[in-house]
Image (cartoon, rainbow, N blue to C red; front, top):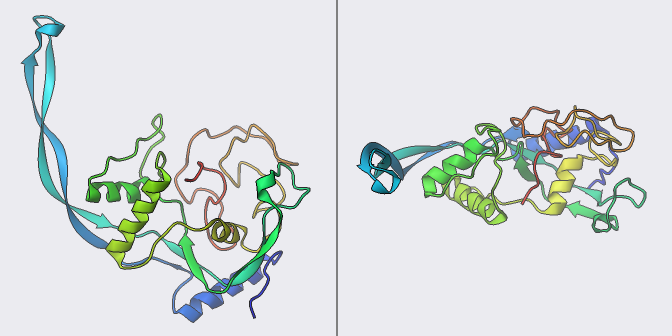
Length: 249
């Protein structure tokens, strides 16, 4: 029988998750093996100064020469988390603060098979490796927020889909974007409150515009930028930063 986990406490949903992982012969958190691929990368080399009389007789414009080099790209698959079978009530209740019409009506959704979802948002490190291997232009950062282990930004839905296709090809494992129902089920992790951490938001739990209060939650000074993944508390299924950060494609 598939359990209805809506409103379950943390210890109970964690036990369900651990049982699902054991049945699959995996740990709750796992990662597919790394692979390496060779790619051709264009780099700028050298510099020669060319007189441009357009700018004046003593002014020069640098001209860079491009050349191609072969590089080895390490493909590091993301950490994945086992999500067990179960049913939950999807959507928000009529009386929930800030509710919009597209969040209802609430309805029961059942997952009859376990699945896995990324433990963190995809990072710049992970996405930049995809760009190098495929010759895509790397997405830009914003105002020096940083790259590395920060969540990748400025990518479209199509970009995200192509990243999943590429990751599937490199690992021989099926990767895709989660459905809305899968995402909400994983995010809630059995909770029935507006957020998986309770009735209200706080800057301790999520990265958002915390100068504005939600419900009885406190206000605070907004970070106004992303933070490295894993910086904020996880939910009961060990998923990080499921709320806040940046809008998703």
